[in-house]
Amino acid sequence: MKRIIALTILVIPGILAALGIKLMRDMTFGILQAPFPFLLLQFIVGLLFFIGGLGFVAGFIFHRDRKRNKVQTRFKK
Image (tube, rainbow, N blue to C red):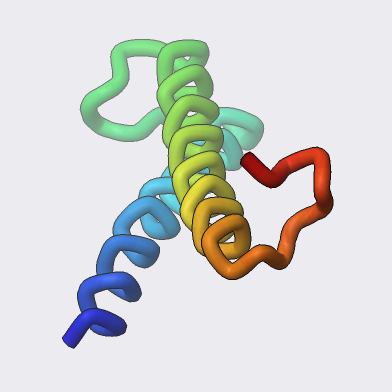
């Protein structure tokens, strides 16, 4: 059960990061999505989704590796 919960915790930010990439790609091709009034706002929201999702997944993996002592000595507490 713990593994399913951990997978769910990682999938949701991964989906947000993928949505961010899609929003930024659509802005590059000039496709305006429904809730955004102009393209620059769409790109900024996409960038925030991507950075937030990627940062959460990276932090989760880093925290797990730190608990298992699989990081370099400068990252250990």
